[in-house]
Length: 364
Image: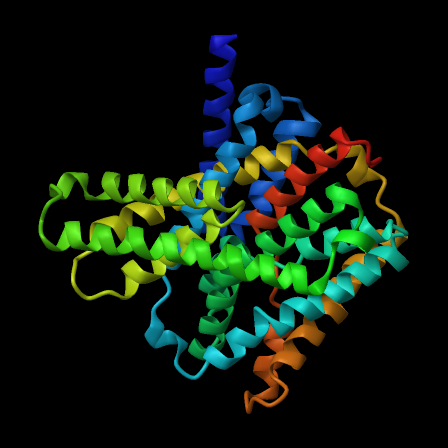
């Protein structure tokens, strides 16, 4: 058993890094190869069984890894890049998110025939886009700096917001049904409180870390280790105070560290980027390996239509509603309308909720 666990972990890391190398070598999105490798290693060949391998540690590991990835994403956000785009970003993560949620929930209910409560939950999960796939695509497509900044900021900020929305809807569903528990005011209040707690915790830890770095209270060879410890502590403490607020705490920590001028964080930035690639590779392999192959084979026309609604209706509506009074060129709006891939947060949240819903008696 001990040897099989070691072998399983080694296979996951080997597959993930190989997929990343092949993607770099042939200039294709890494997520495609990661998903393919995960499918082949999991449901197709049975080479790895994530649930058996990680047991009850699977989703705590996934959750913490996502937090570290968002911290790494926050480190790439420079406030200078946001100038001229802040209005669009603000609307995309608020009005745009609401439009996306409503359209997807309605499509899930009408097209897929899903119960309204679960349709609302699915819509909430799919609000996020995600830096784990947006940023690698931007490196290859290379749009204008304005568009790139919008997509990068949206992708990183919408993850904690979307995850919070999904958790609040999920909790309302479990507590007695969307009709009685799910109110717009309740959701809005919950999101504000969660994001406030996450922001406050992230800001405090970032401030303390900067002070330690500025005063040289941390040996150079320990800087990255201490930074990682601080992110994990902020994530865990924030989550203890408010469910899923840890994602915002990690994101805010990264943004503050990236934009402060008091301490040199070059070692931290370099290390976090490398760690982010490793965690991202492992997560996609693990979660893809958990997919039920039968569910993929049995895709029917309703699911294809649902996917087209997300791509051709939900996202364009969200973008054009968010840029209605903005003088952005039409070609940039069109590009934004077709750039909203879902990342590791959507995958992780969906996987977690699927297990918990099955445990309380929801079919399929």
